[in-house]
Image 1 (cartoon, helix red, strand yellow):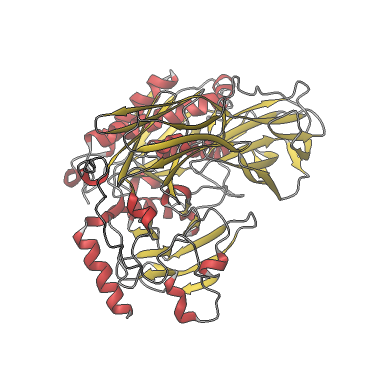
Image 2 (tube, one colour):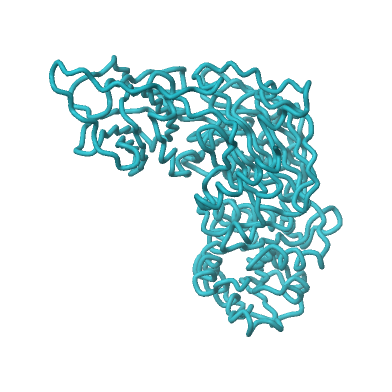
Length: 613
């Protein structure tokens, strides 16, 4: 049976290209609701689901004695979180990661907080806190898991003893409806661009959910002949921070979602380009059709109890890994949100894992524990809950891999591939130095390894948001990385290699400027592009953005540019031994500009260099 299943899946994949889902012969037919509503697009603009920093001012730096972070509260008069300190705070740096985790680094601050806080709020999940070495002094790192579409601002209280993360609810100003020749249009206008989640429901309904949104006013059911496929519409505030538009529809419909400014548009049209239903003469009996013979569980009501762990042979009815097609398949539970648009996948490549988070507790459905794999890609797959009411599926890798999540009406899939099969352009970012024994240079209160890591994270954040270039990093935390492993790792996984450093001149504090290093490789002619070509692009872009002194492009026998087999550069952003340049580098704004310049250089490099794989 298993081999038959695998063959069936392989045939289905070949027939409908790489985006179709494996088909299990014993699966029931689609439910009536699923047949009537063919969702072509689900929230296609990923940026609408990202959290957004709307802080009006950056937090200025001060020099105060070391303080302690002693409390975390959610005051009634603040829509957000208050982090309290025992005395004034010197410095706070903030960074939003691509998975909507907001990282607050509080320098010169001991951590007296609990390690984990569970928040009962759709805008924020867990909050984690830990002590860390930040810029050469004891510090506290606080990580907030933000919800989709959250707009937030970060600021200090006037006495600088509190950090406030305030959330803004998007007010939905207007919901409009109109009919076109080929379909119906629903427009949703908010103070900010609304993030939509579109899903079919029972009784021929479509739900358009708007997280972190509040309706300016609610409407009753709207009906009329002005619609083509919509029978009625209702807008409701289903909880204090979630609005819903409910459409009762008729016909086999496809849905397309588009965004422009602060307006989202949902268009309903007949799926598959079919013609309109035949009009019926007055008094004429409609054509009668025999209903489809349902399979045993072909029903909207979920009567399948799921996998209870008592019979291991039954587990792959709900979750299994197809070794031949390198695909993890998870059966959807009817009546529960479990589509590709509402699960999260974190690529924890530095720990050789991919973590899929489902929107709820599904342990009773798919079970928990480990699924043995041990093929050329994976060690195993483990299932458990994360302590926040969500089920996490951890995919444990033998090598760095890429993941793509997609779904059909019955199954959720995770396609697993080599990165070079999944991405056309890959850059490896190398934050120089790291770990307790290799801090790099230090001067004017700055430590190089911390600055290198901070700029690298900002580079990766920009690249991941844009999605044109896939980015990996040789380190994502303050840890030691063997110097010779860096170029080896870069060559194995990337098309370009960018090492990020800060400069120092201990015997001359007046020295300033930016320089980029490169090294000739034996395969430059074969690649048709050299490190010198790449260095020229990076030096020009950094100078244009930062306005620093031009210390020229240079070649030296640095290990990371000498032993790579791909175009590589080592960028010295500026001198932390120069008081004026160090003061600039110390600010998050300047490091963000440096990160943007590096990203612009990466984009320009790929515009003239096509990786030869």
